[in-house]
Image (cartoon, rainbow, N blue to C red):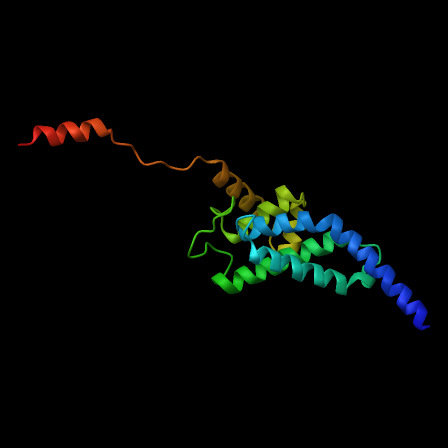
Length: 171
């Protein structure tokens, strides 16, 4: 009996290691996009990934044919949303602007954009995962995409030569 448990545990560990080897990089990238941290300095994203993988490992025997990547991604998204809610009082714009490529977006916009465009999750699935109507997910995704595609507003540049002439003309 003890040998069977040891054998089952070893097989479970090998299967999970193979899963992590194949999925951890993509999940870390998704977590980094969500947290809007720089790819080389992403402690919040690494923590999200660790918690997601630990949760997936804990429920590994109960997956029963479910996709472990899908389970890990769901937990990652839910954990990010819960953390953003507690940290910022909701999924609204935080006090200081994150530095990552999606830093111009609110946490909710980042979450929906990453799920929809990076992970390829259908609108219906994203809506169910977040508890939002499908139309709301579509609207937020469209707004986030427009924000990223819109060129940043630049201040009008005053010519330097005009300044110099104005100073020279005054006695």
